[in-house]
Length: 376
Image 1: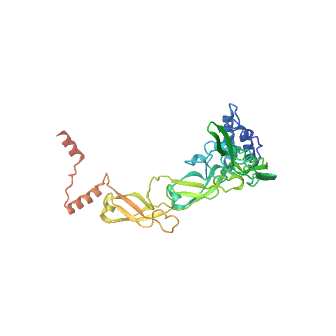
Image 2: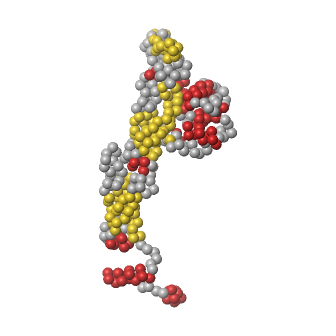
Image 3: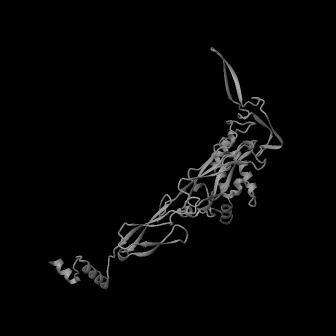
């Protein structure tokens, strides 16, 4: 794509508005989609069109493309989360066009009788810090959205819904076949109205009477502080739009919290490790460790005689509890560091301490004595 003009691929001028870009994409996509276009290169051209739209429909990517002629690997620099950052995703634009061509709209609908929009699911990855403080994320996903041209009605000017003359409004057609067992009756979904019992006179040309069109949705999602890995947020009416004004589905955003380098989460509690000196362990000390919130410092009281691996609990410095004012606790796992090299004065102090405590220690030898012992 680097050597191709994205505006030329979409067939718009460089000063085209967002609405013009959207309309141009949908117009070309209808003619290039492999479900409609049987030319050998249709799939590749549709993919190319979708990639061009992916750049030009996003303000940040478009600005970078206009300036540098490419978006490189920095397409996500605007702070939004695009489809590459979503896991488990929903439909891609190609899938949406397949659903669109599949109908279910009446007036040529070829799909099931369902009018209500389906729920959609996307996943969103956040950091543990974002889970602790709460964060606002903008996600970008593809869905069947209400048509702007007709306001979701599916009707052009003077258009109207009428009872299907094929099934007489029943949505099903009964056929009778003569067999050697006699007349056999069967019922099937009406292919003319897609099972809705209604067709459209003078449908909206933009959505072909469905009241919904494939589109790229941008949605700001408020992630509350304290959310846990795997929890789902339901965004009402941001799933698939319904046919001709029918109820839209919901968007379910499943949150995945990334593992942290320093903290390990256990419910609303956090665990971390801290290194202290042997004197601090013996005498006790007050140390400071980083908290999970921005610029947060936590004072940890190390008890006298603290042992390696001992756990010190600090109340109220864990993760915020979801939609509550309280927080879990922070558990600090203590690692006692023994110095590998001692100065002369430090060794003398420890030797005196060992003598006071009645502990035997290794005899200190000079380098010359060590050499003589090696030869002997």
